[in-house]
Length: 60
Image 1 (tube, rainbow, N blue to C red):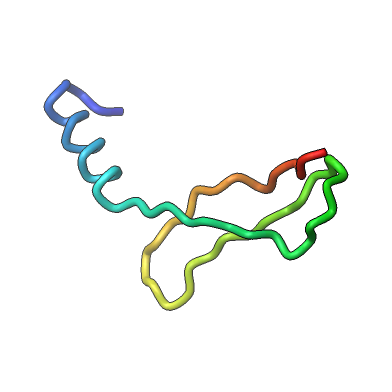
Image 2 (spheres, one colour):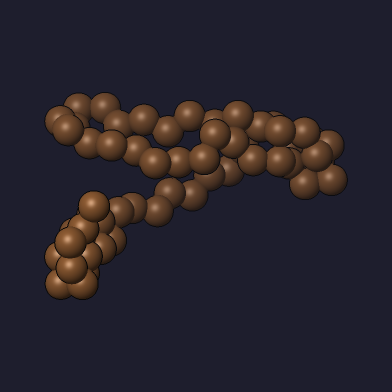
């Protein structure tokens, strides 16, 4: 737990300063509203962590 506002700001700056956004184009183009599972992983990067959703619902 972060003890004060200054420490909290440092944590936020550290996290936001090291994040990336990825785009994704699905190979399945069917618009059926079904859940599509995705997997995001980092290879060859030591001590990296990935926070990503487990998937998405295709449009109908």
